[in-house]
Length: 293
Image 1 (spheres, rainbow, N blue to C red):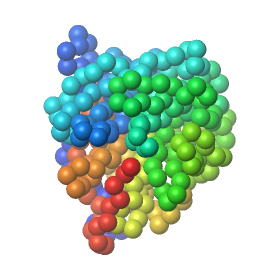
Image 2: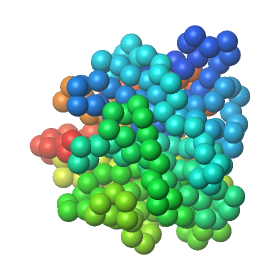
Image 3: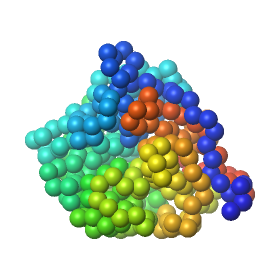
Image 4: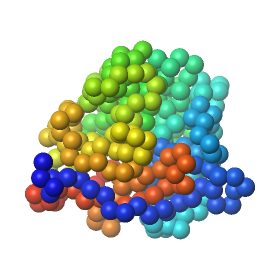
């Protein structure tokens, strides 16, 4: 594939260090970034003292900034694990705004890893969060996690990583659709990887964007912990292993729209916080990037 067709990131710059003011190093792993109505940026993410201990990740970090590049101010934890709600850990928050409130989708785990929970909390100010009284939105496996939600046409679509069967199999990017962000339909598969397993796989942190008439899927870690592959398709519900159009040196990558361009983040265990880089898409067509809702 011609070089001009490759999605690329420039150099990363650290924008937030969760260890600042702490007696010991901390990390941010899977995270989300959203701008509130006043223009202030909010970052939420898995956090824990180093070294990594994923099944002891029980709170979501929260930080705010007036500019995407910072400086960022550490806030109180946005959410802490609730065993009475069936949560065993808190993984991979994703926050969107809709209908005058904020929706946080996240993985709450559970005792049965073949039926892991995807949960919902809502807020009106991004500081005080209330879990859905109805309980988990749905359950899936193996360790279904890393939800990402966007609007496609007249419906909401949630992408998340799972396995081809809840007990294991090919690592996949699954998706479900909803009309109200609360009730979600049956699972479908947007991408199936040749790799097979149960726990951590290479379809984590799925992030889908529309740019210049194409749909792009970002997933990782591939092939190592700090590595994200990019796949392109004309259909947001079908990506194939042969449609790879880029590789970014990033972990748990999220895309952010600011200053009329896309940016990509990177974080993770032993990464020293959250990093940011400008992202470049192929320029063979007129740019008509869709701003995420």
